[in-house]
Image 1 (cartoon, rainbow, N blue to C red):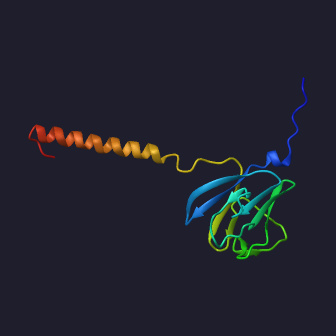
Image 2: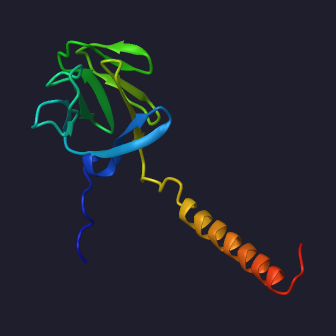
Image 3: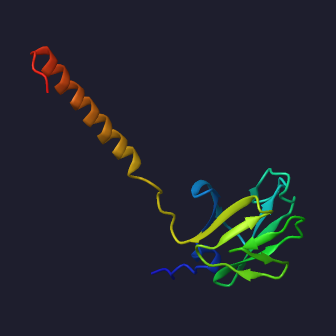
Length: 148
């Protein structure tokens, strides 16, 4: 019998940042490794091509069984849930809102990713079928001279 695999905190902590536009989710990136860099720099883990975002804007670090956030020397600042973040690490919790340069909003989430709005394609199909059925009934009624 083999020994159970050891799990590192890095492997056990499943986290992501979700870019928001208003209340809409527009992109998602898994937070992996000991450091997750955010900025305009092409070597960043999350590259944001906006002028007000610094090349090295913010960094999320693994600290034991949780992540922390700190500003990486940005010009226009980083906020966590509306409060300014400096270079000292601040613990992150699922549901926290990270703002970069008052221009980018990122939602920090932990746990398995849930599909968003998985019911929409089914609803569109059902609506299409209802419209088609109503059209057929109308056509049948007009073909027989009956009006609804």
